[in-house]
Amino acid sequence: MTPTIRVRWFVGVFLGVVMLFGFVGFEAWPLTAFRLFSVARDDTRTSWEARTVDAAGVETPFDQQDLPLGYRLAEWPLSEFPSSSDATRAAVCRGIAKGARDAGRDVAAVRVYRLRERIDRVDDDWEVTTDPELYHECEHP
Image 1 (cartoon, one colour):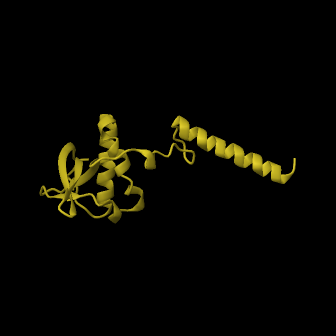
Image 2: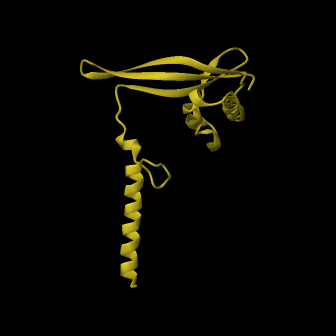
Image 3: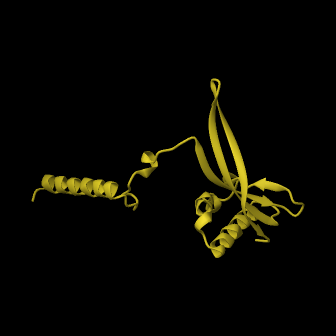
């Protein structure tokens, strides 16, 4: 078999596998179902936000970009909070508290909020309304 034929076979098999994963809906990077671009979106979005609370009771948003690289992906486990076990929630809170402490913050508690954002057209402009709801609180993480 010549190199040209081997390359054609490889490309054909590769494209066939990518298409198969797309049709079946199986997620295994780099073979994916491409749901990022195909999921219908509406005017409401739900996201999650962690906030730290210091000893005086002052609540500060957990700005991940100011933290060491290992703590910047806290959004991923936060998005799974509703289906997480209590042990997993406690572990996530401990991780957030450790990252905030490593950044120099005083942390007495961690609060996790569910943010429901809605976008509305007002005259010729767009207005975003955010409705935070306290979902979980970890004391002394």
